[in-house]
Structure formats: C-alpha cells, structure tokens
Amino acid sequence: MRGRLHVVPDADALARAAAGEFLAYAREAIRARGRFTVALAGGDTPRAAYAQVAATWREWSGGPLDWSRVHLFWGDERHVPPSDARSNFRMARESLIVHVPLPRENVHRVPAEMPDPRDAASRYEVMLRDFFELDDRAFPRLDLALLGLGADGHTASLFPGDDAVDEERHLAVAAPGPGNGVGEWRITLTLPVLNRAASVVVLVSGAGKTAMLHRALEGPETEPLLPIQRLRPESGTLVWMVDREAAPWVR
Ligand code: 6PG
Image (cartoon, rainbow, N blue to C red; front, side, top):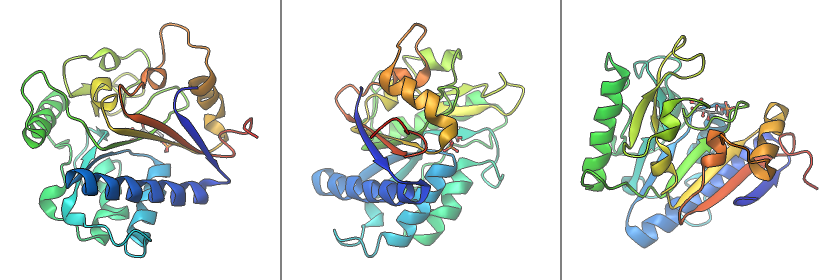
C-alpha cells in the first residue's frame, strides 16, 4: 500500500480527525518554516473538516493557531464565480474563513470568475509562482495538499482520461470536469504540484467510495493508471484518512 492508512468509525470522527491533522500540520509548518501553505479540497468531507477546524482552533492543545501565518490555496475549483453555490472557495469561506482571523491577503483563491477557464488557470499559476517565488520551470512545495477521492478515481479535478492528468509543466490547468465539458469546467492543480507537497492527505467517506479506495490502496495497478493511483508524493508523506464505511475490509 502506498502511504499510511488511518481508519476512524464514521464521518463525524473523520471530520474531527482531519481537523486535528490540519492543525498539527499547520503548527509544525509554522514552527519549522514560519508559515503554513495548504491547498484545500472541495466536497462534503472537507467541508465538515473545515467546520471542525473553525470550531476547535482556539482550544487546540498545541495553543491557538496563528492565522496570520496561514495561506490558503485551492487544489481545484469549479469555473464559477466565488459567490456561486458550487464554488469551492465559497464552501471554504462559509465553513472556515469567516469564522477565523485569517488576513484577507492570505486567501489565494482561483480567479474562476474569469470568462475563459484557461485564463483562470494561467492567472492562478502566476499567483502561485509569485507567492512561492518560482522561476518558469520550478514547482512549489505546499506544506499540505488536502484531497478527496471520487468514485471514478478522480482527485482534485483530475478526471480519468483527461489531458490534465498528464500535465507535466504547468502548475494549474483547466479541465472539462465530469461529463467532458458538458457540465462546468474546472481549474485544477496538476500532479507535479500535488506530488511535491510535503504532506498529502486524502479524505474518504462512505460506502460509495469503497471499491475505488480499495483499488487505490491495494491495486491492481493496470495501465492507464487512474488519477488517484498517480498520486505518489516524491518526498512527502501520503495519508489516507477514511471512515469505516469506506474501508470495511480493514480490521
Ligand atoms: C470537488 C473536488 C473533488 C472531491 C471529490 C470527493 O470539488 O468536488 O474536486 O475532487 O474532493 O469528488 O468529494 P466528496 O468528499 O464530496 O465525496
């Protein structure tokens, strides 16, 4: 199995455990490097985790989190304005950002209101390059990439069979999303960025994910590999945080 597996009883416990991990990674990154850079995931499981972070950051045993040193990015975003109900930024704003003293300039959202999703991806890439002070060929090292898993094997907005999965040069690209562009487009970080993060945490909840989670953890690894199977941190840690329903085979 690739990475470390952490199984908790149910979705509530998963949200609490994920919040604890978030706070622990934040504290460690701030102690070691003076700041914490995290790419947030969309989805129901992360939403519950962010609400837990907002509810617990003051009482946390390690002492309150210094939000002035936290920088939020997004692993992926829908091609919708920030006020749209489908926006991952809006989800994080409502579940976390409005509840904590995070400086406005520390919110590095995808400019998904731009009319062309490719322009939004390019602008987001420029924002990342500026923030991390990268030249044209370098990749950032996020402290934490929080991700989800789709039942089809997608992670972030890297969907099976889409060109975005093979991107090797760009930090962020536009992707047609589920339905091959029939629905909304997405803007997503690419695998080279996710695989260079210091820590990657994948949150998985519910019986609908069991088959894919099992395949991601135990194989078979037949070509072409699914996006989730291509998540292979180069030197970082990979942690699967899952509930019992998603991993019923684990004793
Ligand atoms: C999104 C994310 C997507 C998500 C998974 C799991 O914004 O939807 O791009 O990768 O994390 O689909 O989502 P759930 O936690 O809702 O199952």
